[in-house]
Length: 266
Image (cartoon, rainbow, N blue to C red):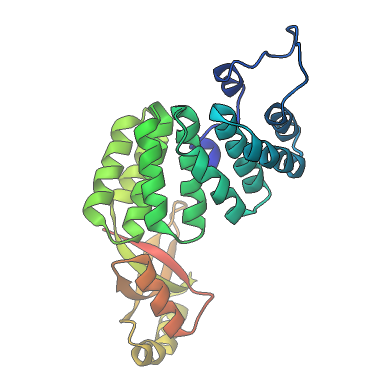
C-alpha cells in the first residue's frame, strides 16, 4: 500500500515550539537552544542524521512535552533516513503524548511504517487512532488508508466503515473518487501478465494453468480491461483471495515472485 505521507501528517512544525513555551527566533533569549530545538533546526535543514542524534539525546534526558517532542523528532528523523525500526521505537512514545496534534502525526507515520512492513493490523490501529485525533483532510486520509489496511486483513465490514468515514470527512473530489474505487474492491488476485494481443494472453494463461493446478492456487483467467486511453489490455490473473496474505502465500506456492498482487473489483 503506497501512501503519500505528506497528505496524512504534517512535518515537525513550529507550533510545537509554541506549545512548549519556547521563545522563537527574533525574541530575546536568556539561554542557549535546547537539544530539542537544535534537533528541529537540523531537521529543517535536511540533516536528518544529526537531527536524530540530537533528538535521541534529548529524549533520554528531557521530561514532559519536551521529552515527547524529542521522541517525535528522533522518530521522524529516523523515518527520513529509512531506519524504520528506530523510527517505530521513538514514534510509539510520541503517539501517546498528551499533545493531540503530536500524537496524531506520530500515529499517522506509524501507520505508514507498519503498512510498508506488511503489519496491516498495527497499521489499521495506528491510522484509526490518528483519525480520531485529526480533523478535516488529515482525518479523511487516515480513515482512507486505515480502510485499505483493513481490506488487506480481510476485515471487509470494518474497511467499508472506515472508507465511508473517509468520504464523509473529505471535501476533496479526488479523494472521493479514490474512496469509491476502493469501496469496489472485493478481494485480491495474482496478476502474471498483461498483453495487448489476446492470443498472447491465452498462451500465457495456458502456460500457467498446470503450475496453478499443481500449487492449488485457483483458476487462471484472462480478463480484458479497457484502459483510460481506450485501449484494451488483456490481464492474465490467477486465483481469487479474501486477504492479501493469502494471495502472498499463493504467489509463493506458484513460484513466481515477480507476479503482482492486485485488487479485485466489482
